[in-house]
Image (tube, rainbow, N blue to C red):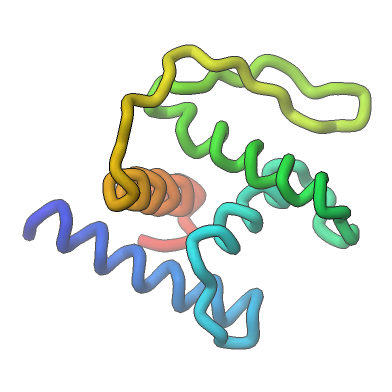
Length: 118
């Protein structure tokens, strides 16, 4: 089975499962899933976040997702519990479709590691 087909299959399973759990079945988009990962990484699940905090949560998620690819490295938690990362290597220039594939692959791997999907 090709890698791309397996990624597509796992992505569809993940979107369905997350959508059922967090959006009453309405399909979550990539940004929504990244936001959920940010909330997971921050750890404050039952809090209403302001717009700036939501952007920060998405940044945390992207850093966490790209950490295994050696683009970011966890540095520390600040006094409010926000994780901070340092840039280890700049991302190469990617086309929009390539960015999407990279993020989907990183998200699928994130949830595979946590055994949320198989």
